[in-house]
Length: 583
Image (cartoon, rainbow, N blue to C red; front, top):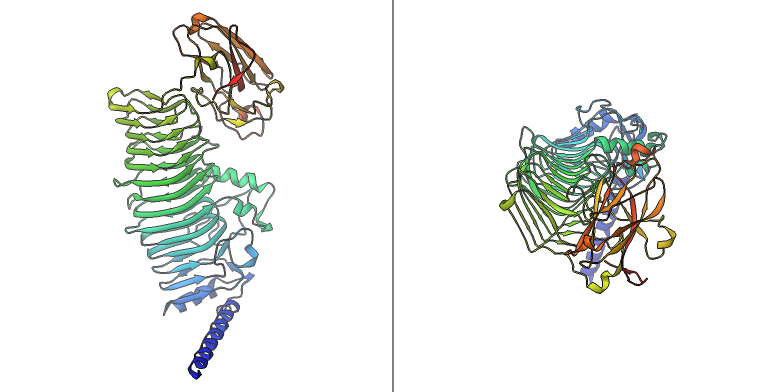
């Protein structure tokens, strides 16, 4: 019993001691450091880091604001640590915050924090108080890691011009984890890494600056200014030389390039990439150069809402190696989901593509391409194999209406076991309608923008029709027919003011012309001769494409558009009035 009491007493003493140490750590500033956001703490903090570096250990900065007018170096064996155990949003004044003013105008200057071998930065917020949204000025990297075992964890970058650079000189076995924030020119650059590095849980988005609540940073209309800047300048994740980089759970919104693979004087990258996203980027992922061992990307998400080339993935001319994409999703990529222009083995497996894209969702004019077990939801040409492509294997893919492959390399392509067009029962083809933008995958041909919910549907179509699509310069719809039957075709369509006229035509049935700036129904009479011996006919929609950004002041929509199509009906001669909407 006495022994039990003694153990309990010892445990209580230990717990009390630990609490006391924790409280002391949270309340004590390093010698000479003020932390009032006004006094320059650079020299005092560097002195503390150097002193700690003699034995190794931690320099802890409790909650406060620390003005750093110069730059800091974290010696080997030292961790510079703040109060944050996780990144945060809009709480810059509630933890350890570095206010950084050094290196203004010097993109290639000394980083705000340089990590030597086996050193770390943890738990900090970093703000550049002199950076303004309407006058963005270059700054050096926020953090530059060199040597083995650099660690960066739980860091929030509120408005970094450049985020984190690893390597140059060499690096091995780095760990970059739990870093969130707004980066303007470059986010994360990995290079000179000759052994496995790890990157985990990184998130870049302009709202970390825009919603920070740090008033002095903000300027009139900063959101539009900053996003316009990142869309024109930001390369979020850049990979040079790295021998097996492991990357997972990373994301960027609003960049010129989401992920870029380049060759530096030290070489190129190979690596494993899992759960990565590039949203609203001009290019989601750009491969300029990779190692022969290649890159493997699983569970990727790529969109490209605006800014040329509007592409999900681009393999550049001159690139070699291998790039594999498994279980990736592509949507709103008007310039193409995948463009292959280099001599790379590109494998796409179990991927999903949401849009119809002109000339095709996937285009290859060089290299070797394998597309297997993928799904295409937008209709139109799925894959285009152009002269210059070495080979193509297109098998086991799904596309409502039948997979469309533009094969211009002849026997060098193997195409088979893909979905074929659905054959509708003759009874359904007497009198039917199609909702454009909704369940239209069996009918969409080439040249369409993505389907979308529509609040401007003509009154006569409601409530059955609630969606629409914009055509482009030359768009097609594939319409099922009963061979030898005559039809009356009606199309509900809208054209905007100031835009060109569009014509709707079927071979052997003439044309109907839109009235600019009006919602209307157009009618074509299709004679029996036009459907003789056919199961489908093609409706062509032609005109000069236009861009909203060029016609309507203030629009950021750079798509190439034509007419807005809501629905159509095909009435066979002598059929009843009931409409069957096909899907």
